[in-house]
Amino acid sequence: MSDMKILVTRAWPKEAEDHLVAQGLGDVTLRHPDSPMSKDEFMAAAEECDVIMPTVSDKIPPEFYPAASGKVKIMANYGVGFNHIDIDAARENGIAVTNTPEVLTDCTADLAMGLMLTAARRIGEGERETRAGDWAGWRPTHMIGKKVTGATIGIVGFGRIGQAMARRAHYGFGMRVVFQDAWQVPDDIKAQNGNAEQLGSIAEVAAQADFLSLHMPGGADTYKMINADVFNALKPGAILVNSARGDVVDEDALFDALDSGQLSAAGLDVFHNEPALDPRFMNYGNIVLAPHLGSATDGTRVGMGYRAIENLKAFLSGDTPGDLVT
Ligand code: DGY
Image (cartoon, rainbow, N blue to C red; front, side):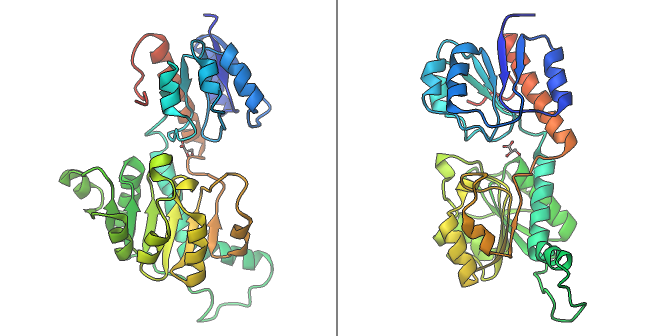
């Protein structure tokens, strides 16, 4: 075994942790108990570790990168999103970064479908009413929701997860799919993913959408991209679904849109400043609140660990990792 020091910042599923240790890549620290790393721990890791395997909820201080220069060689991230890592600072300080795409595509799209259905059909509200013993019985006007089958879904971000959402919506629920992406999507990809129609802007997508589902990456380029202009462009009574990143939505504008009825409901898996939600969320029974569960299935979370390990092994053998973030 090499004397390479490898730190995993948060607990992984045991199968993935065991697989990492079994590779014999070095001296592995599986950091337990499972709590967020402090700034001091990151600064200590910058001086002590050759490899860091961080994850999407880590708060990495800016000072970490220069301090890690010449010591940390790779951050093999557990997660597809890497907006918690300053890629420029990593590059400037000679630190490679990898992520874990593909393995979580289906489960994240499944969760987004669940949020859409739950918000549209008021399942969360109904569950709370039933559990509280307040259900007064079936009646024609009780808890009327919004029909999903045959409606139009607008997708922002037509990467792997956006495409998987389009397939579920179109082939499963007969929905028309319109989408926005800066990338000019080839016709065959559109045809294979629900005959999706690419429109020129998010506002154009919003104007046609009964449901708006977000699948773009987080980070500076998409920060608060879903703002008052987008909400105002929506069909009145539309429903927002966000399984991407919290900071792509302007939450003040979201609450305004719910208050005005521009949005009738929302299904959200991600928030600004997770897990400390804006307390206003608690005032809205028509928002489905999920605690960042997109990839949270047994096989997927193990698969994410395996994928991070594959990337690390490639890097340590001198190959280019399959998921190098460039
Ligand atoms: C990711 O990998 O970026 C996801 O948000 C975790 O579910």
